[in-house]
Amino acid sequence: MLIANARMYSVNAQAATAWRTLLEWVIERAGVPAEAIDYPPPHPMASLWARPDLGCAFICGYPYALAAPKPALLAAPVPSPRAYGGKPVYWSDIVVR
Image 1 (spheres, rainbow, N blue to C red):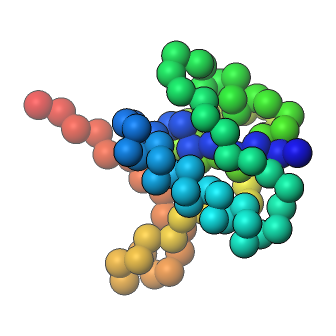
Image 2: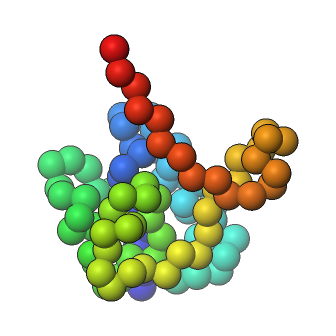
């Protein structure tokens, strides 16, 4: 059985619950034998991403770019504003003060 997790974006208990609900909905709709698991801090994220049974994870581009072997990219978010032209666009914001 595969696992799914959105640890990188589960910034608090409420967010973790929302992500788990979404992942469980996607798993059910896809009919994939997978389970949304908890993987809270201080467990290292790199260990999660390296699991051979990882079926779904939300990660940013940096760990994906460094991964070897490269995981198969199954989907990317498509922002809804018209400016993105219906395409998955990746960016980073650097905020300084």
